[in-house]
Image (cartoon, rainbow, N blue to C red):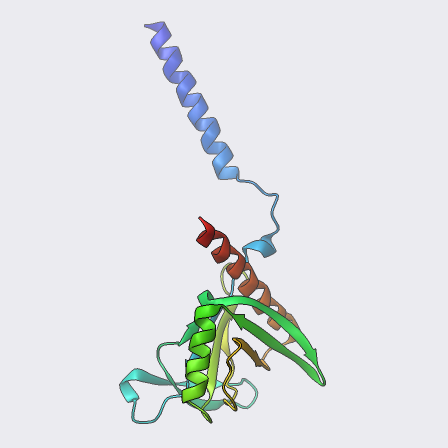
Amino acid sequence: MLIGRTRINLYLLCFAGLAAVLVAGCRTGDSRDKQFSALRLHMEATSDAMSFSRVVPIYRENPMSLRVDRDPFLTEVNVASAKVVDEVGGFVIQIQFDRRGAWLLEQYTTSNPGRRVAIYSEFGGKGFREARWLGAPTIRRRISDGLFTFTPDATRAEAEEVVLGLNNLARKLETASKW
C-alpha cells in the first residue's frame, strides 16, 4: 500500500512541475515579436448601397465622412510585407500584397478609377491600443504589381508599429502555411 501512494505522489509532483514550467513559459523572445496589426482596405461605396455600406470618419485633424463598403476587399492576411519609406516632406507606408492580394488589388483598382480606398488599422501591441482610419487615397491608376503605397494619418512611430505588426503577422502566417 505504501508503494502505490508513493507512485501517485511522484506522478503528482511531476505533473505539478510540468504545469509550473508551462505557466512560467519561455521568455527568450522579444515582446515586439508578438505585436500584430490589423489592416483592412474598404472600397468607397455609392450612396444607393445603404445596407451594404457605412459612413466612416477619415483623418483626425480635419475629419471627412466617407461612405465605404462594410466588408473589406483586402485584409492583413493578404499582406506579404510592409515598410515605412521616407519621401520628400514625410513618409509613406508601402504594403506588398501576396499573389491573391495583388489580384484583388488589381481587380478593384481597375474597375473603380476615381474612387477612394479607405484604410483601417488596429495596432499598438497585443491589445491593439489604437484602432482608426489611416487614410483614403484616390485610385488614380490600375495597380497590377500588388504594391500599395499611401500616406497615413499617423505619426512616424505609429506607422512603424503598424508595419512591425503586419510583418510579424506575415511571418507567422508564412510559417503556419509551411506546416
